[in-house]
Image (tube, rainbow, N blue to C red; front, side, top):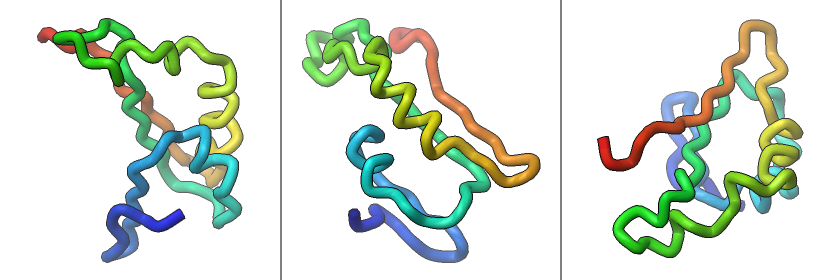
Length: 83
């Protein structure tokens, strides 16, 4: 899978985490940032009401690639989309 951005020691992928995790076989991660849909169907947006945040395979995929280096960090962004 091609990175969305790669430079200065940073690589960013813009992808479905389940697909990305299946393909990832790179080095241990320092950090993992995920921003799954809030499942509010915000403003009628289909992408925000897919159910992906409630599917166990979503979180299994994140756990598979979770940071494993000492002091690694993982963060999922969850907040009120109307705030």
